[in-house]
Image (tube, rainbow, N blue to C red):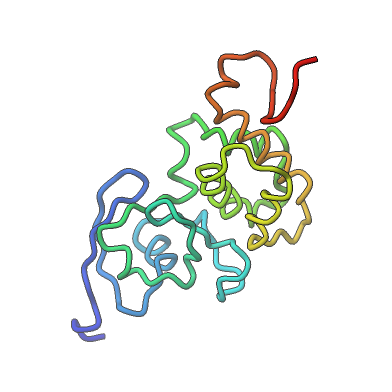
Amino acid sequence: MSDRHQRTIAFTLNGRRVRASVATHETILEVLQRDFGLFGARESCGQGLCGCCTVLVDGTAVSGCLYLAAFVDDADIVTVEGLSRGAELHPIQRAFVEKTGFQCGFCTPGVILMTKELLGRYPHPTDEEIRHYLSGNLCRCAAYPDIIEAVKRAAELMDPATLTNPGPRRHGDTET
C-alpha cells in the first residue's frame, strides 16, 4: 500500500499517550487489536449492530468495527482493559462479577463500556432507561435480567452517597 493511504495518528489509550500508523480504511478495532494487543472489544456482526466492539471515544460509546482509526487522532480512547487499575476492578466490572451479568462473556466488554456511558449520563437509571440504553448490545446467552441487576449495582457502587451510608439505597427509595 502506498504511503498516501497511510497516516500516523496519536491518541490517549487507556490513560497512556500512543501513536499508530494506520491505513485510511482501517477501523479503530483493527488498530487496537493489531498494534496494542487489546482484544476485549470483539467484532461479531461487522455492521455496528451488536455492541460487541464498543469502545469509548472521548467518553462516547462507538462501534469499533465501523469507526475509522484516522478519526481518533488526538482523542481519548477507553477500552474495557483500561477500566481496571491493576488488580482492582472498576466498580462496573465488580458489579458485573457480583451480579453475574454475563455468561459466555463475549458481549460483556461492550455492555460494560455502554454502562459506563449510561451511568455518566444517568447516575440512577430506571430499569426502562437501562433497557433502552443497552438495546444496541446483543447478548446471545440472554443474560439480560442479570445485566440489568449488574447495572443497578454498578450505579450503587459508583454513587458517593452509598459509599458513606450502610446498605444499598436507590434513588426514590424511602426509609422504613
